[in-house]
Each structure stands twice: as structure tokens, then as C-alpha cells.
Length: 360
Image (tube, rainbow, N blue to C red; front, side, top):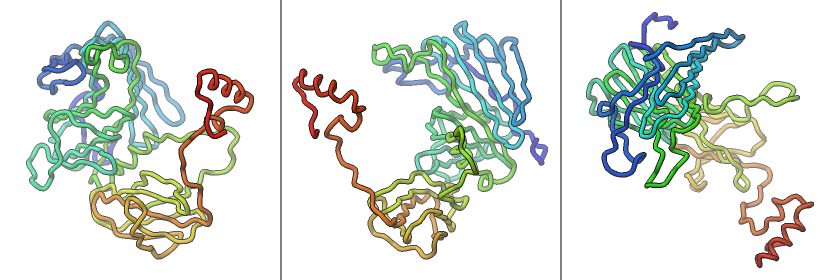
């Protein structure tokens, strides 16, 4: 429970709903009518569920299983952590009928004032219950989201995180995340990628919080949800971060380029401020550059660096290294990718086909 004791949800959360998609022209899968124009087919609230719960050292896991649309079974695994506000969901659908849309809904108890949704290197930001001409982001209809969406109410908010489920829609006080848009054909051809046949497992999560969006760390939590820790057998010692930043920026990419280590990051909260970066690797100075590494402006300091950032600004940093790495070139021969024991067979096959491998 939150310290405030407020309820954020106004009804049952993570209810999975199947709705009939009314196609308006085009091929099935090309167009999905917005939710008010779809008919409800089934939901996990329609029938009795089999529920089991397991208590572990890190979390309590609840599994609910019930009949669902098309005669299959919907299985919902829900994980409630002891030390984290994040609640994880893993929903498995089976044999969803053609032209059926499946969503999970999270009705809010109060009016949603502002809506944010992740986009590459930032987020879109718009008003909802009350018009606000200062907020220009699009919030109506079905919208794409990258990793997360967030719904602010008075005194708090709710975020929906996802692993590859980009569809969001908001109607009144109820945000939904799209789990599946079943379409057995695309432009007349069978397409197993879109079909609801078989088993489909979808992963998403929610984070409820008190207080302001600025302190909730939603973009960071979305990155963490999409980058779970990897256990390495036999590894000793503690994990160490080679690169650290202040809480108002997120590193999106990091690479070697010639004689530099290049880091691209973005301001993630939507506020102007000062960013800090700590690089715990040997290097000989740092600079802010443009997107292609030119127009360098040196930074003072080391290994800690500080620089101003604008709201959602994308920043490229370059750290000079002692040695340069070779430039990336085209691959002109298969030999480097084939084990030595198989190269003779590769050459024989290529010669027989009239295409001897080049660059031997």
C-alpha cells in the first residue's frame, strides 16, 4: 500500500478483454476500430477462475486461469515484489479467433490529467481530462508507445510498462494495453505473425506511485524492465558500472568509434537542468559533439563531467581512448564466419555453383 492510503485504481486491474474488431476498409490487420466502436466478446471476469498463490523470498506470485474467447484458456501470472513497487504480468492466450482484439485494462479511480508515452529518445506529453494548450502531444485514439506509458492523476500516477507491446488507448478513466490483434491473413495471404492460433505469451507491468512524475523514475524503470539482470555461472565479485549518470538522463547507446568511446544519452524527465556523467574507464578527455561526432566542445573534469541539458535533449559525448579500433568494413568472404574444418566443403560447394568465395 502507498503511504498516502489513496486508491489509484477505480476497479479491477489487469482484466483481460476480447473485443470484435470491425474492419473499415483495407485488409484485416490494417485497421482496428477505436474501443468505443468495438463489441465486447469475452473477459476474464465472465467465468470462475482457478487461482493459486506462491510465496517466495522475493515476491508473491498469483496465477489465475479461466476459459476465454474461442474456447481456449487465458492464464495470468501476476508477481508482487517485496522490495519494488513494480507489479509484473505474464498473460498467456490460446487460439484467439480471427479479427479479435485482446487488451488488458486498468481503470483509474480519478480523472487522468496528463498522459505521457515513450517514443524513441524521449516521450510524447499531452493533456486529457482538462484541456491544456501548453501540452501538444496526441492522446486520443490508439497510440504507439515505446516501453512505457504514464497517466497522471491528482497526487500520483500509474505507469504501464511493456516488453514489445506498443499499443495503448485511453477512454475516459481507463487506459488499456493491446496484447493481441488477431488477423489470420494480411493482404489475402496467411500470416502466422498476426494469427491468434496457438499460444501467445505477453509480458507487461504496472507501477503505481504517489507524488510528482518527476520523482517516479518511470523511464528508468521501463529500461530496467526491458533489461533484466543476467546471471553468469561461476562469476565472482560484485557487478560494477563502467558508466553512471544523474537521474535526469538515460544512456541510449554506447559504442567504440575509431579513437573514441561514443555515448548517446537523452534528458528523460522533460525539464531543463544539469546532467552529470561518470566514466570509470581509462580515457583522455571528453567532449560534446553533434550526432556524427563533429563540432566537438571539450568538457572539463574527469572522470566526472557536468553539462546543461534542455528538456528531452539528445546529447552525444565522445571520450578519447588510448588506441583506435579498426574501421568497420564490408564482409567480402565467408571464411571468417565458417569453422576451419568446414571451409573446404564451403569452397567446393561455391565452386560447383559457379560462385567461388571471394577474398580468400
